[in-house]
Structures are given as C-alpha cells and as structure tokens.
Length: 445
Length: 164
Image (tube, rainbow over all chains, first blue to last red; front, side):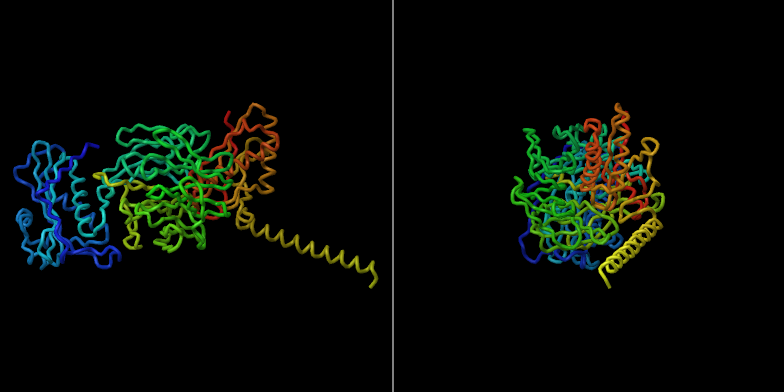
C-alpha cells in the first residue's frame, strides 16, 4: 500500500468547547440512532482528470462510504440525500442550520475536494445543527488512489467527535476465504477493508491456512499454514509478501497471536499428544515455554498491558478458560458457567474477555469480565466461534457456519459482527465464504 | 430350605439376572445399530473405513472430546501392528481428526492427541516410533460432510496412512 500522507491543517481545527453540543450515547446500542446528513463533498471544478478514477463523482462516492460506515454502527441514521436542502459548496461554507433541522438532521457533514498535480486535497466539517456550531474541521492531502481511505478517516474523526471513542473505520480485516465442497475446502488468506471493499488474496490456496491474526502495532500478520504438510505458525509481512516459519519446533505449532507490543508471538506447540503454550520473541528469537501441563493448553491471548494471558485448557476435563500471569504463574480458572468455553480474546480496552461458549449443542459469542464474572451472551446460533475485537473494543467480528445436508449442501461460513451491547448484529459482505476474521488496528494511527 | 437348595436357587437367580442383563445389552446394541452403527457416540460401522491390507482397517473412532481407545479400536490397532511388523520397510502417518462441533484451535490439539493415542498403542505392540509420524487436521478434513451425529462420529477418527 502506498504511503499515506496525512496533513492536518491546524488553522482548520476547532475542537469546540463542551457546551450543549450533541453527543451520541453509545452505551445503549441502536435504540435511538442519531439522524445525520452527509452532504456530497463539493468537487472543485479546477480538478484534473485521473486515470481509473471518476473525479466528478468522487465527492458523492466519499459521502456514500461515510454514510455506509455510520449506518453499520447502528448508532447513526444517515438521512436520504433527496431531502437535502443546500448545495454542497454552500453548505460547506456555512449551512443554513434551520433548514437542515427541518429535515430532522441533528448533525451535518460537509466537505470539498480538489484533485491537482496527482494530489487529492480534501477538507470536511462536522456541524452540530441543534447548537448551530461547527464541531470539527480537518483537511487532508494524499494520493488520489487513497480516496476510500479518506472517506474512512473522515468517518473515524466524526465518530470520535460524536461518541468520545476512537473510530474503527480506517481498518482492515484479514480472514480465511473458503471455497469448494465442504469435505474438500480450499482456504486462502484474504484481506479486505472493514467495509468489505478492496479484497485481496494473499495465498493461492495450495495449502491449508488457518487463523490469521494482525499485529496490533503494525500490518504484520501471524497465521498457521500446512505448507509442505507441516502445520506451523508463520509470520507474514503483508506489505512485502515475505514470510517465515516462527521458531524451530519439531511438531505442530498453532493458535498464534501477537503480544500487545507486537514483539512476541504466543502460540501452542503440540508434541506427543500434549499441547502447551510458548512465546517467541521476534527480535531475539528466544523461545519461552509458558505452560507445562499434560492437558491441552491453547488459544492464548495477552491482556493489553501484557501482564496476563487468557487461554483455553481442558485440565479440568473439558474446555474452560483460564487466566495466568504472563510468565505462566498463578493459573486461575475463570469460567464456571454451564457448558464449555473456548477462544478467549482479551479486549483492547482490557476490561473484558470475549469467548465462544458451547452448551446443549448451541454456540454462543459472549463477553465477561476478566475474572469470569458478569458473563453476557451476545448471540446464539447453530455454529459460531472465533471472536476478534475492533481496535476500539466496541465491536466483535466472528464467523458463523450453517448446517450441511447429506452431501454437504447448504453449508456456508460467513463473517458477522455484533456490538458488545448485543445490538446491531450484521453480516459482513465477503466475496467468498469466510472464517477466522482478525481486525487490524487503525491504519492511520 | 437347606443350604444346597439355597445355593442352587441363588445360582439360578444369578443366571436369570445374567440372561436379563445380556438381553438388555444386546437390545441396546441392536437399537444403536439401527440408529446407524454407533455405540455411545463412538462410530462402530464400516461405511467410511478403508483398508491397509485385507482385514486391516485403516482407522479408529473416538467419542466426543475424547482421545481414549475403545476395545474395538485397540483390536483394529493390533491388526495394524501385525501388518506393520510383517512389512518392515513401511512407514505410516497417523492423521488425527475432530468433528465440526468444536472450536478450531482446540480441535487441532484434540486431533493431535488422538493421533498420538493410536501411535502410542502401535508402539506398545512393538512398532518403532520412528516409523510413525503424526499430523493433526483438527476439523479441517471431514470424511462425511453432513451435519449429523453419525457423520460427526465418522469424522472423529485417526487414520493410518502409508507414506511409502
């Protein structure tokens, strides 16, 4: 990906003082989404033509992406453009607040863009229509091919201003793209923008690949591959395409994840019928054994401060979730509810662990406090697992499979997301069947 | 009633109980058979089974979340051991598998544990560990794609595959 240049024009930034401005209450889910008008960005007529890019439509397209992002949060209700009362360029200068209030909008996004000398210059403003105030104004310069990311960055800035939380739109999701009959599945690593566009395949499907996970600090990925029929954990640089085996283990390594500082990989190593948890430092290559127990220990996940590890073990008989210090000491079982528990994933905010629960033939995605109390089951289905957090700890993405008939017909695997309030469950559009999603950190951070 | 009579009666009672017990087991078996070759939840049928040689089945089946070998599994593995002793140059890979009703990562570990349970048993019957490699596919390679208890029981398996 081309380097992204983000220039903040400081004179344009007005973070308004905290009086009487609109605020989205994000603690309740989508009960009362905020009506927002996203005006098409005005395209400066001086803009130059670009190959493979319809510059005249760019302002409209960017506003559509912003609208879609907002709609998908469940927190906003983007209003139909037919009802809009002002031309984009005039609204961007200064909206007639009372006219926009008439169509029941509470917030308005305006902007303009110019394509000139292979640069795309964009500025946008967020207006509080009730208080008749400007809330945010920002400008960017980037290469024109980055126009979709511009839309996501604008979405993030507005989301941050209105909710008080970091956004998650300028992000990507890596996953396993699946095709073919159920008993001869072809699996490839795939990556897409969080809104489902820009799908790219990173492997050809010659070997089985599983469980890709992003480094939380950059765009490196760790995953498991059966390359040469040797199931091992790999490290992949998605910018350069270079990859390498992680460690020199005489057997299967699997269930990899990065440490929160991105400097270690934590994973399971299976030998002689026993799986234990290990870390490898990516700089020094030093391997450390973290658990030593005759049971299966797998699916490790660090707390964001790096001090603890949640993992899955059947040392009590069946799969349960345990938490230990990152050196392997002080192991405590945290799940005691009915059923069995797997795939613990520590929230980037540190306060919750997401998990998969299996009970009486049904599968649940849930969250609980890190000591196992306060369990909340967000969604129930025939089969679903592998939650991954949005970088702001607000949304979980996971995969769901359907029941198959006699010859495997009717089987599908899809990505879904749900808000941690349990609201706004929705399917993510993917080009193929998909599983094992992992959400990246913010690209522009 | 003298002591002799008492003992005969007890013996008869015991026999009767034994008969009742056996009938119960048999009927239990036959109902399980009817519902498709499954005992408890271990597959006992032959539908998916292939053979390393005549009379030497290539796979054994497991209960949900378990990697312990059943009596039938041990009998199958003893046949494999005899076959491997006769074919000294032959090496094998044991593939461990799980059904689709569990999380992917745990199933990878479970498949590895199942494959090693079979490997360990072959080794106790004199087959060198050097001749047996293991690989786990977790739930990635179901032999039966249907979502049903029977196909799940067929998929919970370890399969001995010739490598040369």
